[in-house]
Amino acid sequence: TTETIFDATTFERPFHEDVSKARHSIIISTIRLRWHRTPKIIELLAASSLRGVSITIIISETGHHEPELQAMGFRILHRPTYKMQCAVIDQRIGWYGSVNFVGHSLADASVIRMATPEFASTLLDALGIL
Image: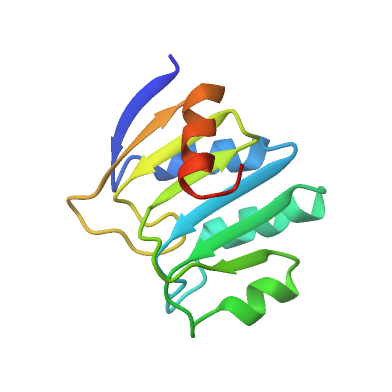
């Protein structure tokens, strides 16, 4: 299936699988990079980066973990007006919803995954990446 809806407790496994299988690029848009304990997704993104995958994280609030992620080779873009929570993997898989892909999500958060280049392109266009 190309389309699935997840909640805050069920999205991580398939999202982590998509990140682990990425071959070219991962773009994540989130509000902030704030956590107490480094989330597993950061380790997965770092491993992807070491495999040559381009990692871009778009944030609206700064002042947290940006320098350490830049030191890992991640590209951090500050867009104060962006509030979208989404991810695009290899320009063909799109994730969009209210979950925080790199931090703690609220219990009632949800996200849709669509494995179509058209949906991924729509998200990239909304982010001003295309």
